[in-house]
Amino acid sequence: MALPIKLNQLRAFVEVSRHGSIRAASRFLQLSQPALTKSIRELEASLGAKLFIRSNQGIYLTESGESFLRRASIILEELRVGQEEIQQRIGLSSGTINIGVAGSIARSVMPKVIIQFHRDFPNIKIRIMEGQLLTMLPQLRQGELDFTVNTYYPGSLDAEFNFERLMSKEYKVIMRKDHPMKHATSLEQLTHCDWTMPTPKGTYYKQLSEVFSRMDKPMSFSVTCETLIGCMSLVAQSDFLTIVSIDTIDDPLFEQQFIALDLAEKLPYATFALVRRRDHTLSPAGEHLARLFRIYCHDRDDGHVYS
Image (cartoon, rainbow, N blue to C red; front, side, top):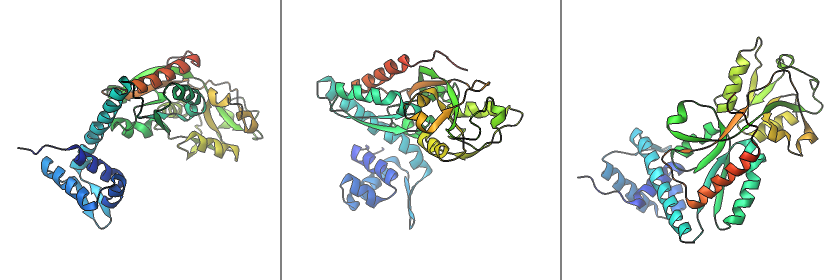
């Protein structure tokens, strides 16, 4: 008969996995290293499997450990959300909401949403991760993110995650104000230029790369910047070009450094969605935050469904 698994064992396992060493995890949990090691050994005994490989270079997850990590992380995160949900329902507004946002959302909708949410729930903490949906999938799977607002295109992730359409946005090519190609009127005129974009494995940028690959002379994306600010910093100080949403272009600071081109070819519209794991339930405060994103995104919706 398998021994029962205790919460302190799950916490020990997850934190050692995240920190990569017993010493760092013991400092984080404020436990002695022998106590932490004992919890891990008891957990391995309960499961009947080794979870870590220990070597002079550090500590690594076994195949069984990799498999168990996702489930252990989800258990701990669901317990946290459940505890916070009860506290919020009885009027003790506290806890933490973890969300992800696309770079253009961070520069447009997100500030207004967070300001309003903070007025409504001043005691709730929020952690915000910025980036593409692709980089957030592990955190969503493990329950470390409650949801993300990001670009979406129908595909293989539909069975695993819930995608709630929020808005569609137009995208345009941008360059620095004094770029030698600032009078270009078509993509064909820009194929020789240097381009930078986030990884083409991402949803919208994957869609873009497919469009460009069908051109007679496809442009070359020689630099991959995983964040919007990285792309725009490079474009501001060089002849590189990139592609951003119309919301980014509408930023009052945009015209100080950049121009957006009106080209003959229309780029695909990007669809933004609220993405969360299908079996994840938000706390009341989390639901309120999601509702605010729905409201503010609806006000900025360009109306296109999919391009």
